[in-house]
Length: 471
Image 1 (spheres, helix red, strand yellow):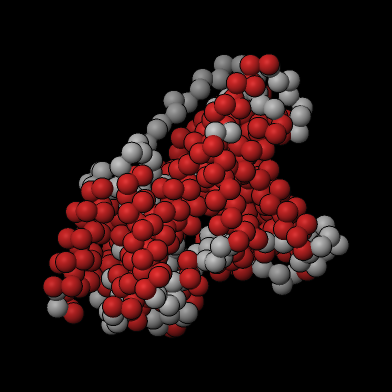
Image 2 (cartoon, rainbow, N blue to C red; image 1 turned 180 degrees about the vertical axis):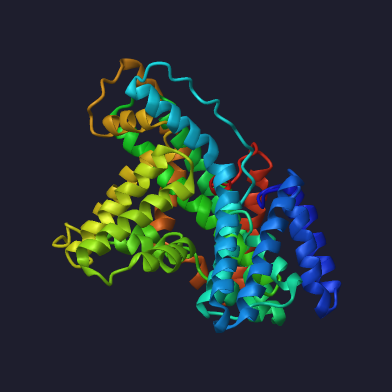
């Protein structure tokens, strides 16, 4: 089930809110957990069993760590290792088994070893959101072990935290300590609910009106083969808008749903394409993942404590693993490597890009171009396809005369209008987080209009799930 679907908008969400607000205070978490499991198991009930097992393991490990005390360090460490191992094993089995076997076969084929018999590549249905809820659940036991938060005795509260459907499938990644007090007691108000509706409606507009429209342009460009350099740049800019509005739209919808149920989640996007460096970009893009990687990977590796060179290496390692987290493909590894290289180089010259002498507007433009180049590997189906597309962008690929026919598909009035509006929102419009802080009559009318238009357009679109559902 996806947020931008009729069954969610007109059946699941209204009924969930109705039953939720009819429940007494002690029953609200019970109801929210129940509807979250229904939401998650809608497409495949088996997924709920995996999530429950992960939840139970981390809850028990948290109890062992919290109750053992400092004089039982071996027991605490064992519980922590069980939590980390179980989560990473679950993630690795479903997400990376096929990739590992395929890479193994490719390596031995490349080496030309005689008598090599390729291993059959296994394929598994990837459980939705497994990359998100395993990180989220695992962070709880790590925080308890570090004494950065208290362990929870109430299993239902912890189950509600892991399964909460607003941010279950594609984030933002929430740490338990951020919502621990809210799970115990939270405020429900008309002001909070109305702001939640605004977040949700604007997020759906980003997805339905902008992301999907830009996605059609990107699909046309990437499926075309050889392109004129201008067409290829137009296509990758369209994809950059698509993934931004798709993911930030989902985050807005998740934050809005959280507000409707009384929860306040942290901001996950902060106008990332306005960044003047790659370092700043990662302070603004997918903030919850950046924070998670910093707290649970970068700092344990040594962070910036061992000099600039070691810091650059740590950043490269983190981004390589961050790329692999996004998907089991060498394309994602290359995407992470590009960002790791850029982050490391900026750290070596004092947290500045190599183009730091340019005026800010040009620094923003240069950063955006670097992000675009990296996005090619994120979007292309194969590594060879990414290299070919990059060749098109820089005029290194022979372009057949027939490619001129693409102009009629890429530069339609509707496409140009969608791209223009997307650019205006990216670089000129206020953020949802700031715009929705005070809701007056004009803003309420705007939200209603945007919602009606989005639903109307949604009824004419084919099924188009959020991009990050694949991760």
